[in-house]
Image (cartoon, rainbow, N blue to C red; front, side, top):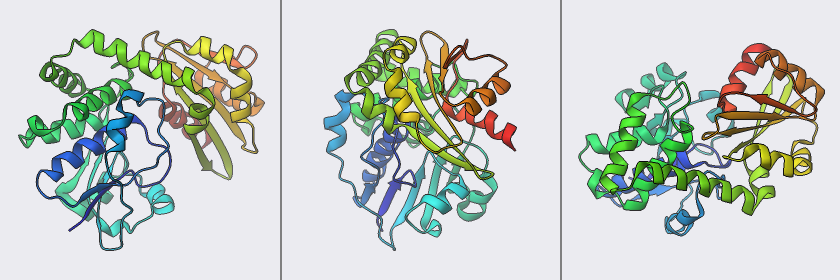
Length: 308
């Protein structure tokens, strides 16, 4: 039996998916060899360049009709029905930290559906491997990726969906690797900043989500970096170009885990009005400042609730 680990679509992938998939592949390869990953080559800036060579060693394979599928960091039934490139009946296991479709998947795959509200899919995967007494067999690079992913997806443990288990697993990984927690955190966020500064055009374009709701289209680009305000001020024209298009609403959201700040950038009056109404704050020219950390998935949830 061939296993394919996938995010369900060929859009960009972030560090939470990459770290989870690589660790899970290593885990299942300890039991049988025919385990593959299938992912997009479009990586977001959340993945430090020092892991590129390591990730390049993992062979990828498109699923064949008879292959079995493990979904990671996704469980949205409607999204998968529209975007996935395989038969959903071939899914035999799923790991996701976005609750909503638990009943659907439990009916299909019973106890192989691991869906819970938690800070990161990487936390789920690390805990799963630990509980199966195989974590010592996972490579050092895969463990570091898992720790980076937990740090990234919880935005330095500031998001409301962060649970104690996220903090505990993160601490356990770094203790096992004998890495200083503070030094690791500073290095990771510095590396993400360096990615954006190294190639701002690529990463601005590469982390865009498009949604359709009630015949309205929404385009949202996302940046997660420490010096986010300075980056925005220095790249306004590039951001404007990325956000241009025929969408009804378009904006960029950028959050800083270390500075606890989020900025919204938009050149669309409809978008500005909608964001101001939801956040109870005002844009100054094309920028709205929000005194807390927020990610794209959180603001989209607020906007969708408003539009519905």
